[in-house]
Length: 150
Image 1 (cartoon, one colour):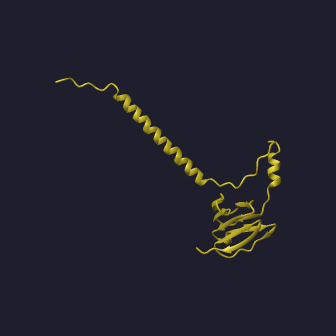
Image 2 (cartoon, one colour):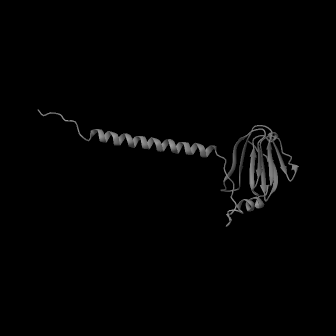
Image 3 (cartoon, rainbow, N blue to C red):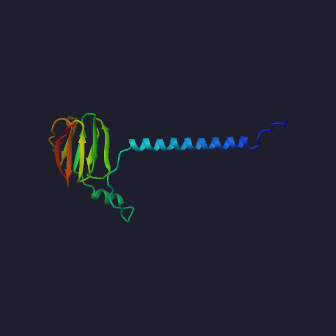
């Protein structure tokens, strides 16, 4: 009967497997963290076209910016704002008392969980909102508010 010898590559194989498992777990953790942070971040609206001069970029962007409405939050409320069709979501989430958002897009629908939790100003005038959950549709800057059935 022969002697049993340990495989000289056995520890190396175990080390390679352990490094592979650690790398796979690391990728899962990094991917999960990126997914969670992307879900918590605020979506951006359409950007202005880039200018050729970096020094004039801020001035050009500010000059083109038009505020169609201002939404002031007086209580905690759920809000969702997106453009028509396959456009990005501009805002999504809960806003609290004191938060303020500007509507910078001419075509957007803003759905508010409770109309009494917000004050919407358009050109210095407060928009009258129906009670309950509402959607405010901005079409080329003009606003129309309607009740939403759950």
